[in-house]
Image 1 (cartoon, rainbow, N blue to C red):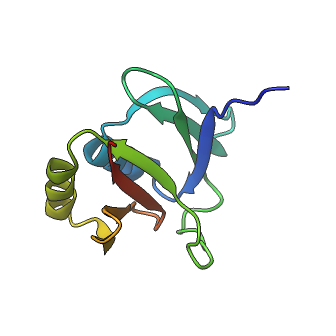
Image 2: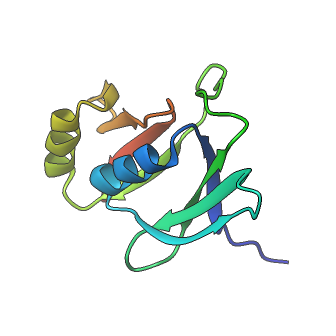
Length: 122
């Protein structure tokens, strides 16, 4: 029996703001979208241009406020081929929320408070 990860879901309070953030911060683009006929929710899948793993952003009409993320003890990680340029870009965006130079990594925070780990390619 084999398993393959296909997506990670984050619920968001403002879908367009989140789409803009993920595109600017990580280069992720919208792949497909489904909106309920009654407008109660929209699911949007985003990913890299070359495919592979995707993120699912879910917006619920009945929940426009930010989500309670508890103690923020979870995250998703991205590897970059140019760590220094990525760090400078995220610094300019003002979204770096934690740095660990000794481990050679840092985290950025999206508009809803989700943390994303940024790692250099090995």
